[in-house]
Image (tube, rainbow, N blue to C red; front, side, top):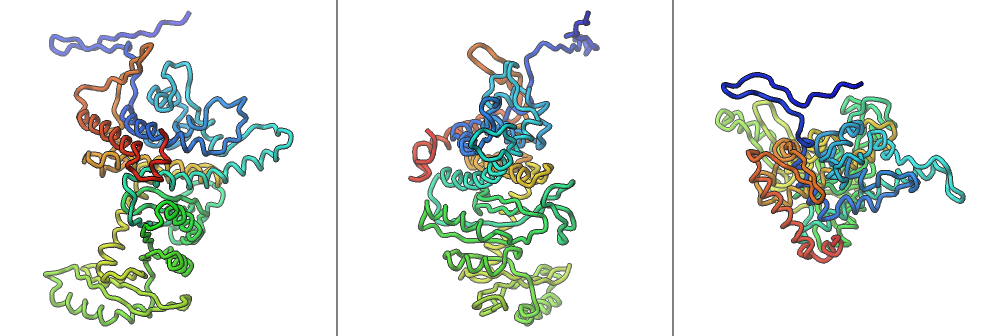
Length: 486
């Protein structure tokens, strides 16, 4: 005969009042603020659209969790700060995550377990082979590869159909970044520059908003420019198919400054500003300017310790170039020493405008989005063994970040949200406890009346509704409005 669990405890007195502990309230959830993001997502059909595109080789007779439900569960786990599949073993019964996945929080149906999510990232399919179908391993591999392309196509489509006004200029910020590995992941390798075992994914962001446009996982020993022309070509072609007159500018560091990238930009009519490694020829070209800066620093360094000068190296032609190109130089002298930085560009602005007003803005994009992906969404936890499985995991993180960017865009007039990073949004807005109440016709999340961000949350929900309304009424432009689900 089992003992009945106590539901009431009396502890000590607080003056004339007794302190008591009871266990008679409904479920308490910890991430109630995520419903604001889900309101934006559901209204625009974002994850529903992506799920409909993904190949699902599972046998329909044995599918318990739909592709959309699995995808939604993974994305919102990441937003809430739970990056691993095994986190789902606890969260699958969490009422809030059930609500986010459109499951009634009555305790009768749980979400997917961690092992189910892990199998899904490998695109595991049925064990048996049906008559007339390819071999099971071929079906699975085809689904794994197809999903990577589908997700990249989806990112571009999502960017296009969520523009409030058609852009006249788009900056493409491309960057390779290290993604450390800590096991025997396939195609991971030791990279001499980063001094670690890693992958080396390449990501492309839109320069104004930081919206992710492409993400491709690559082996850890790959050169930074591996595959960049093919990736950029796909992005440029799709953008110009929708906005033929848009001006596109590529911005990247020296890792992508290779002849194939220059040739692609010039053939496609792209403007570009690419960092360039120093060499003796360029050093000699700016030697007089460097000497002038040193002289000025010796005379006035106590008053002006940070001296910069910008020069232009005309008609510079590297040995692998078919013709000369413009190089902009920054010569700098600080108390820590002197340095020279170079940028290859076809922009016609003055050298200081090219370098200081345009190129160094890479500190905001892509550096900030990459930092948010790694620090806020833990995109550097690629712990699957298979390469395609890790490519899927990374892209799901990027999709989650795309939702964050859209959420901030929708709240452009809510200053507490418009520029907040993922970790700040999670701490202030998303991680809020609530008591769940249910009835025959309602599911209610009861938040504390004294929550400091109560008023902000109300403005957020209003801003999301306004943003969705503007898009669905067709104010985003022809192609974008036509692609929106109604």
